[in-house]
Amino acid sequence: MAEEEKNGTTMIVFDGDLDKAMASFIIATGAAAMGKQVTMFFTFWGLNVLRKENVQGGSDKKFMEKMFEKIMPRGPEKLSLSKMNFGGMGPKMMKKMMKNHNVSSLQEMIEMAQELDIKMVACTMSMDVMGLKEEELIDGLEYAGVASYLSEAEHSNLNLFI
Image 1 (cartoon, helix red, strand yellow):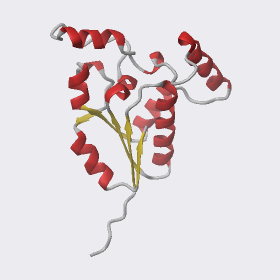
Image 2 (cartoon, one colour; image 1 turned 90 degrees about the horizontal axis):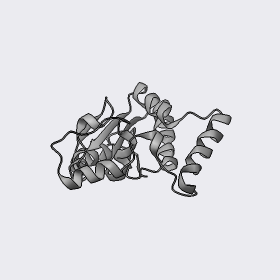
Image 3 (cartoon, one colour; image 1 turned 90 degrees about the vertical axis):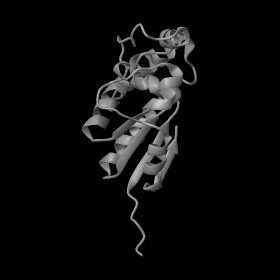
Image 4 (tube, helix red, strand yellow; image 1 turned 120 degrees about the horizontal axis):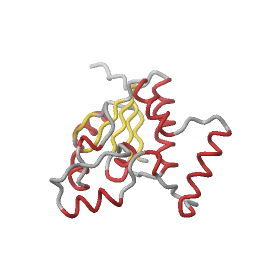
């Protein structure tokens, strides 16, 4: 039996830091531009990258879910850096340097990923744990559990955890 040709790239986006999210989307869009089928699986803090800036999840949330909602950053513009955050000055400096060097913003990279048909999957178990609802996340996502990611990873020749 002939071996299946694997032409996929999968990644788990676990971290919600700006620099790590940028790295995830740079790799994902680069792989898609090379003709790879790309799946990004967002879990735990990585889900904050996908949050809408001004949308709350509704009044049916329990106390702890409301607490998570208030303390977690909402979307790509609110993310901190993993190093040298400096009370919020680090991300501003990084964004200015990126702009000065014609590097796309994280928001632009997310839009580019959608245009390149990169599959972005929100982990439903993590959403439940963190009290996130679908309406709090950007449009165009798929929602699934770890089995979905593992199935995609099995058919890929590059698997990353960021």
